[in-house]
Image (cartoon, rainbow, N blue to C red; front, side, top):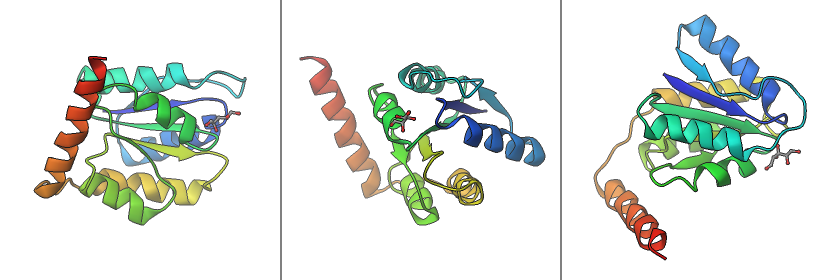
Amino acid sequence: MIALGADHGGYQLKEAIKKHFDQKGISYKDFGTHSEKSVDYPQFAIAVAKSIKAGECTEGILCCGTGVGIGIAANKIPGIRAAVVGDCFTAQATKEHNNSNIICLGGRVVGEGLALMIVDTWLNATFIGGHHQNRIDQVAEIEQEWAKL
Ligand code: RB5
């Protein structure tokens, strides 16, 4: 199950991703927002991140105007590795190397065609582990150290 979330800047793109998933038979849960009315992105980032932490969803896709704000918010949750992606090379690399569990897309940055290609590339890629796992472990250690402060 893929978790989806967006603010008003990413709403249209989230809807396009839902239509794409409907056509491909990919299951998803939509955490909002549900219109183009102006909203604050952190709540949607956190709802998607929590669903992944809880095991309800396996991965998430967040959309805002740039993908940046909603990604910053999602990355505040320990264990979340949210990557802002605007090209297919990065989409593949961030799954293979970073084991990203969320990608963040800019509804005002990428066109729908590229965004859907990025989504497919990321979902079809696989984490390759090895020395990349060591680096992810180091990031997790940093999270734990700073959580104590
Ligand atoms: C909303 O206007 C916009 O700031 C937001 O969608 C996002 O781009 C923030 O990073």
